[in-house]
Image 1 (cartoon, rainbow, N blue to C red):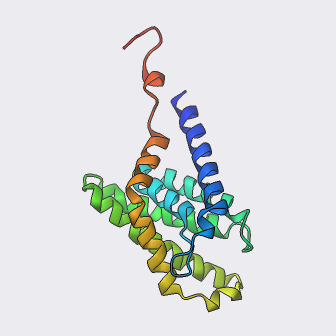
Image 2: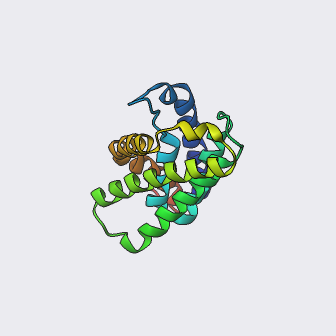
Image 3: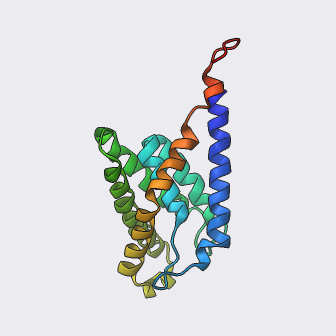
Length: 174
């Protein structure tokens, strides 16, 4: 039962963040760059829940975003999956580090995600990406995701936290 609750939370959160991204966040411009909250959710999930769950969230969030982008279907899914997996793998030996370390991991992984997304797009023939100022996009997305990292890490923890009632054996109260 806890796994079902966790799955429902993941689906709900990815759906909510995707809708917020495409309806609101994509309209917000900082130095001409829109933040990427789906990358943030993917990376935060990798940091909190490890490489496997992070990759799953990254793929799901990326695929949800790909539905609204004019890039090849699966491009964001591939990149978010890989980045969330890598940051999750990087976190395994560092699990006892303080919260600021996790936040800095989100910043670094977000920057990596933007670079990999752009390079993947160029490899797939997305010539419109040639005119993009990659350093500016990297800085804006990484900084915004850094500012939002603590709430995102909390949300990622909540998505995988077992429900207290679901953990209690049947018939036991308290």
